[in-house]
Length: 389
Ligand SMILES: Nc1ncnc2c1ncn2[C@@H]1O[C@H](COP(=O)(O)OP(=O)(O)OP(=O)(O)O)[C@@H](O)[C@H]1O
Ligand SMILES: [Mg+2]
Image 1 (tube, rainbow, N blue to C red):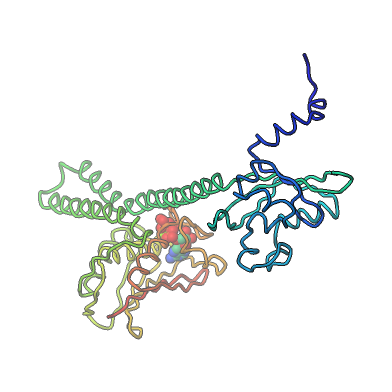
Image 2: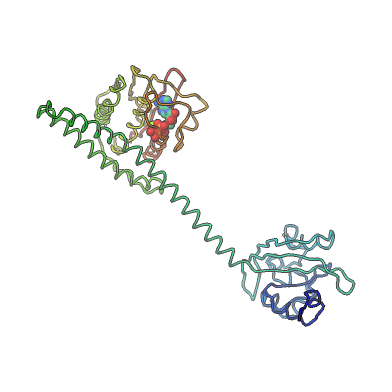
């Protein structure tokens, strides 16, 4: 036997069974927003007896927190103008506009407990005993909502971790490039000229190889620490050193790259000794990045000057080049990670756009800062400040 759904709808038994077994809470209100009918699920959702629901104003019946806290009737609380359920019911009565799966987020007093709930509700206009009524179908989506919230939070955390991981890979590639290219070129030279090299030259080159590979290893450890910078847990290993000696050693190391582009790095300082407390490995990273930029973005023969001055309670170290300079419009972006601007390397050198981002973070950790002055065609001066005390 085939039964059409329309004929089932005419069956009172069918409708009653449906209403009392459906998991959605269903209720009907009159134009005064008083509850005139409801199903079993509605009663179990709000834990109310029939006599406390029938004829009651909707918000009072379901324990809307505003009616409870303000001891006011539904329709006269401070929130009634913002209530999505109330505005849906009003537009159903006044404009005959139904609502489809709207969300009501609210605290309710249910069984003497204040509970935050997320309801999804729809409204439909119906006529009952020749009177206009509105039927409301409510689903409690609190659990799904809470699960989604936890999932979103987890996803957000994963996204941050993933971004940090990608940054770290980029940084590793970036900062390992310099020492590895030294190791590579030295071993090549040694292999090519092995027969002609004297023991003394060999020893010198091996020493450079040893020193550079040691530095590479140290750097690798530093890079693993870099994730700690992001999470704010990086520990600086500060020591007291003569800052001028430190700079001299660093410049010597970077001259290896400068001479390949026929450049010279000079140091200008009014004193020969500045006792300073800082993390030499990190500030070495800062110097390497700034000097490699000065070399990379200048033309062969250009001069590079490292200048040290006292500025109030800080030591200012300027790396001054006479290269291409940076257009003003690009300046706000150069310290952002992975950001390369319109200025390109002059000898096809590699560029990942991470150097200055690393520099800035290391200086932040030293409670220092970095500034840049630049004029296209004239050159750039990057000045970083380290606190003296
Ligand atoms: N001394 C400089 N002269 C001209 N432009 C510069 C100078 N230093 C940095 N820039 C510009 O700022 C951008 C960002 O510099 P940053 O050091 O962060 O990255 P990079 O040099 O491109 O790559 P990486 O340092 O990661 O190898 C560079 O791409 C370049 O356009
Ligand atoms: Mg760089």
